[in-house]
Length: 357
Image (tube, rainbow, N blue to C red; front, side, top):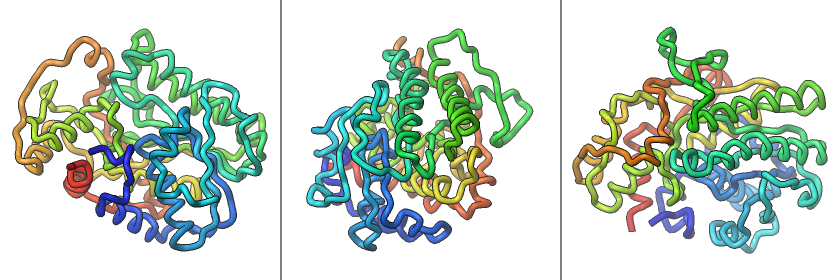
């Protein structure tokens, strides 16, 4: 089962996640009281959880924060957020960030969060134009929407992929690190356009005076993963849920940073509410840096299956990252008080329980 298309509160672990997130005390929730948020990518893995978190706080704590959830499909968004269908504090906006969207703005918006993006290998390979445009033109349109509303702050959800390949000179990538990206490849569209999106944010900050912060997310996973997600971790989890062998399509020695969805959301909120204007922050916890083959083994153990090896097809291979080691330094965000609540095994276990029919 994929709870992104069902009522998420049917999964007790997910409901517990919302309670845990709302228990975070290192930022001031009241900054959002009586304010409004515009969230693109609202039905995505992280965006949908963020919408649920704010709506949960509205219901349980009286936050009175209006959420404008931007989605290309009103039907999909209404189905995903059926839990909040009777609340006047959630409004679905149907629109594509790659088109002009300022006309959609229904009223005053205080905070704009741009989370929409193609974020998995098959999308990079089959829709490279859409991947690039969402990260550049989509970002520009969201920035213009923020300007039209005189928003208090704009948050751009960037990616660990902007760092490129490890040059062998750093164990952990801090926010100033830049590795190599071969721009003359299909696969470069995602990281290069994320870099361009960040540069565009800095341009709007300097030229237009817009208050902007950037959150660089790691490879995220959790109960709200989408059926279309083809990242290795997502495929492993679906294999486990279906009682299938975990299919590893490489030697599995890739060493990356990972983040459970609930921790990614608290990271975004920390950057939004406590980050310094113009700064970028890695949303990463070093204890979750684990080789891919070890992750496959954990999922197989939790699901009662085994790990097998297979070769990727041409489409999958074209979308794979060439980076073999990409660990992020999360100390800058931790200095703001953020900390991950879940270990990798806890996150995997909770995800499998939520996705099991």
